[in-house]
Length: 299
Image (cartoon, rainbow, N blue to C red; front, side, top):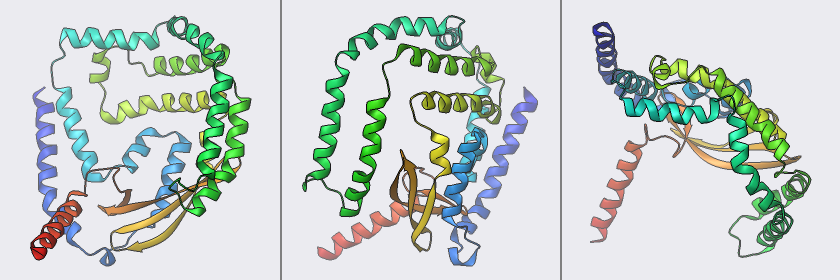
């Protein structure tokens, strides 16, 4: 235990020692360093998702400083003594998805609801499709003409998917649950002590098969997330300093669907604005100062 505490202290000291360097690096103009291509970075995230490497994906989507902070906090949490109440509560929850009869238990709870929903599904589906068509045709819907055309192009494929997929099939649900519960068992985490004995990286490695199982479960309902990731195309619309505007396009049921968003450069890599807090405080602070100055000027 003393050795572990010492290693954590050294890790914390290392983070503190690196802080001046990180601050100096953040003060360096973006033009003075090699700025990576934000489009290529977004495509790398899609590749890691496609590959199913959860650890690499989470690390890629997290600034280095934030990742080290998370690791430190996790390691400190591992030092806490596990209470009997927490141990029993965790065991009860994990047993619901890892017990040999987990699927049967879940099906017994859900199947009556499926039977009830089947009578309502045709009407609800038609109402949903009608509402979508009405919203796209209405001039009051606040979307650009380009977005309207995109959604109108994608809607037939979505309608075909919704009308041809039996979302209320008990057999299909059972198969999906079997995939997910098998993956949960494969993690080897049956109690809180098992989790505490794993590093953050090891937890993510154990969870990778769960991601793969979730993808396979989605395929049962006609959604191929890997194919969507493979189809990803990213275009840099504009770039200035540490901000860039991107457009990502994926194929959804045979139609291109795109989304425009802003990314910011943090610790030498790009991250969607609003997806992380790290590195955004300075921008928020600057915005607040500018707003205060404007109020004072008007006064």
